[in-house]
Image (cartoon, rainbow, N blue to C red; front, side, top):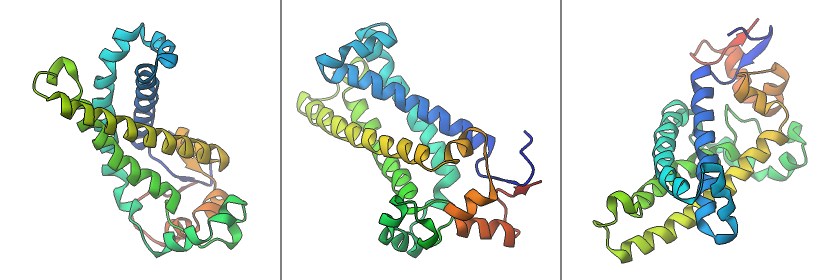
Amino acid sequence: MKYPAGTLIRNTRPARVNHWITATCFVLLMVSGLSMFHPMLFWLSGLFGGGQWARAVHPWIGIVLFVSYAGLIVQFWRDNFWNRDDIAWMASILRVVENDEENVPEVGRFNAGQKFVFWSMALLVPVLLVTGLLIWEAYFGDATPIETQRTAALIHSLAAAAAIMIWIIHVYAAIWVRGSVRAMTRGYVTPGWAWRHHRKWFRQLVTTDSPGPRPRG
């Protein structure tokens, strides 16, 4: 794929495909899960062909999500380690919200908010998988005591609610920071975007020979 002259590669094609598989699975899980959560939301099951189909495909999509998110962890875990820059960035969060990033401490490839989303999902996705398997009646119903199933169902619901809230924050932030969606759909950002939002990452790209996304002309 050819990138516009003078742009920076933010996300490679494999990373973007991996991300959108994960995102698609999450949305399908959210919709099918909500359809089973409360009778008022049962109409959502119509998107899957009815309640039985929604219940049948939900756990399988969950397995795909787990494998897909594992792929994201493999690709991005090194860039998501917490460091002192993140503490300084969080201390200036009000300036970030007010879009006054000129006076915000410089950050690397990901800021503290992005790292929070990454590690929160890295915790919640396995919890959802394990608890989901425990309440998967078709395969594990006979092997799981009812008390365990009830506890697992409660934890699964709470973890799902937390994941949905984090997903909403993630989507809102991606739309709010202009140019972020393009970075995950087309893979590149402008030098101005990188300088404004991830200045330390930009400096690393132009001053080192380390492997990773490079400017393209």
